[in-house]
Amino acid sequence: MTDVLTELPNRRYAMSVLRQLWSSVDAKASILTCMMIDADGFKQINDNYGHESGDIVLQALARELSHSVRNDDIVCRLGGDEFIIICTDTPLNGAMYLANLVSKTVAEMRVKAGMGVWKGSISIGVAVRDHTMKSPDSLLKAADDGVYMAKHDGRNCVRSIQVATKD
Image (tube, rainbow, N blue to C red):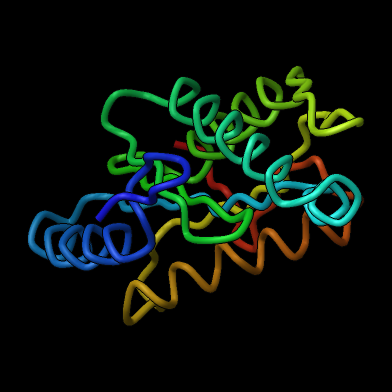
């Protein structure tokens, strides 16, 4: 269950892990968080320089994401230019902090793509499982809504539709 291009776990693996963790969180009353990530400007790289250049960007981004997270975090490629980071025992404010670190690290990237350069930029949506969520899909939807908000707010930022509380 590995994405051939990026060598990261794929969508199927991510969904399997989310379902397992969902059940485990029920049993342990622990925290389950996910960060949905979308590469900004990726379509222009593909359109202007071809899919081979886009593949180079995705491979570089996958490596950077993998190196930017903690050992227990799980980075997967969902497809296209979308990735997910699954975290356990990480409250919203901790996840927002981690997402901002990842965003800053990626922002330093410069990836040669054809005759151009992809300047690292990602939009991240962060969501933590709460009592209103009935399935892993609802957690993913909340994270995806955060990505949409980040794109709407100008890209290259981190957003959540949830509100962090003080620990």
